[in-house]
Amino acid sequence: MIDESLPVQQTSSLLRRLSSLHSFDDRDVAAIHGLVERIVNVQAYEEILREGSTESSVAVVLRGLACRFKLVSNGKRQITGFAVAGDICDFGFLSSSGVTQSVLALSPVMVGLISVNRLSAVAERHPHLMVAFLRAAAIDQSLSNELVISLGSRNAVERVGHFLCEMHYRLGAVGLVRGGREFDLPLTQAEIGEALGLSTVHVNRTLQTLRQQHIISMRNGVVSVLDVAGLARLSGFDAQYLSPIVETPGFSLGREAG
Amino acid sequence: MIDESLPVQQTSSLLRRLSSLHSFDDRDVAAIHGLVERIVNVQAYEEILREGSTESSVAVVLRGLACRFKLVSNGKRQITGFAVAGDICDFGFLSSSGVTQSVLALSPVMVGLISVNRLSAVAERHPHLMVAFLRAAAIDQSLSNELVISLGSRNAVERVGHFLCEMHYRLGAVGLVRGGREFDLPLTQAEIGEALGLSTVHVNRTLQTLRQQHIISMRNGVVSVLDVAGLARLSGFDAQYLSPIVETPGFSLGREAG
DNA sequence: CGTAAAGTTGAAACGCATCAATGTAAGTGG
DNA sequence: CCACTTACATTGATGCGTTTCAACTTTACG
Image 1 (cartoon, rainbow over the protein chains, first blue to last red):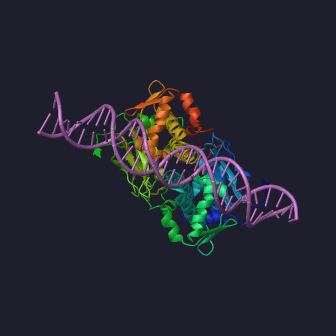
Image 2 (cartoon, rainbow over the protein chains, first blue to last red):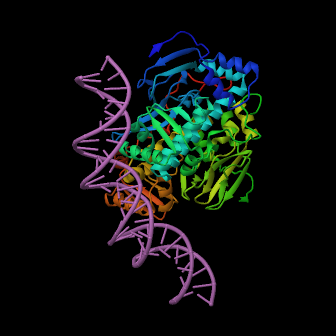
Image 3 (cartoon, chains in turn yellow, brown, blue, cyan):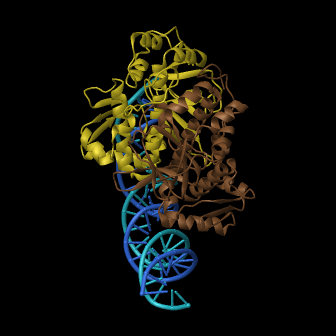
């Protein structure tokens, strides 16, 4: 890792993401701008967090793509999730437990570091922010569940299609989709396979199928979804799990509710 | 659902579970005892929570076995996790979002209901309790991740073996394993298949394999793990993801840290 | 240009799904 | 108490989706 100068306005993706989870007043927004204390630029294939480490900072992806993974005893590596701009790498800090998975940069990644102490202090004075973080954690859980569904109940075409829909949606939420269809996805087919439980060869063939049907195009790490509705239909994608659901007469952590 | 008389000392599994996540003083314990306001007995195959509902109560399994699941567009049903005695059915309440999955009783289940308002009030005065709940949520996340790993990277024998190891461990943690090896698991082979992404027939053959090797026995919903170490080895089971890891200089939500 | 990394293709094998039948045990009603 | 029913477990045959292996092609890049 290479240390950088202090935060510029590079934390906008964090603000954008949190804003999609809760509405904030000006003081909240100011607090969010001050959250990131340090920015670190990580090269592709460098580790951002290592399993078991007891970090005292929360890592946020500000730019680039990262993944969580775990090495399995049979020698394979399973990718359990991705973090795009605006995403927290690991929510372990919420329960003051250590990091349970390693996080790897898949492209050059700009990481924002927030000290845990600082964050708890700020969250104390800004309950809205706390709610937004908890919602982000809840969505993280939903992402895992949806991956379980893919791996357990969907075939290769559905898995790949669903994955692309999800990325399309998530990147769109932070303004990284051009013209409503095109976005960068710096992943090799092997890496897609490690996430979706498919061999590299089969990912390749599956992508070809989707291309032949003019549903997507994908070259050089650039995906273009030619038929958004078609892709969603064919993969059973329903974005609901990605957005905070209806407000409930809610649970509150400080002085007020969501 | 059939409403029951007020809580007896049937909430002990909840206390037992939370105690494994954080140490409590007497006042905390008293608070935990007063947490469950209502007990409801649910028959096997009745729904405990329905997807999309905006419950104002948190549901805890006090006795029996339940599962979370989602219906997939291709007609299948994917079980995404199980809740045993002491487990919270759904952590959606933490982010004041609705319930994102349905929860189904797989055996007669005694459900404890805690009103969300009550819980936030109690958590406010008992930060230890809050930490324990957040840790339970973190373990819930770990369970999902481990299921992703099973579905993505393990073959049938490993999946079933790993699943049995996990249940053995989780039930052991709340005192439901007899003689260190035997426990009730009121699941059909079809249901195991729905959780592990295998057909019923293949679950059957996989269990036979494990029986032939004298690693387990399983009849009438009673599992006996004859070779605990062997089962863990063969399935790559490592209990770490089930227990709160090292304390970190932690994140605090109220006045003090973990 | 030359080399390495990623993508593509074909052939063969395998794990697991599917279908369909049979077995077994535990109710249920006459 | 026995015939009937229902739910679940078991078994065999067959086929598909996916993996594996190995070669080959293309692209990126110094």
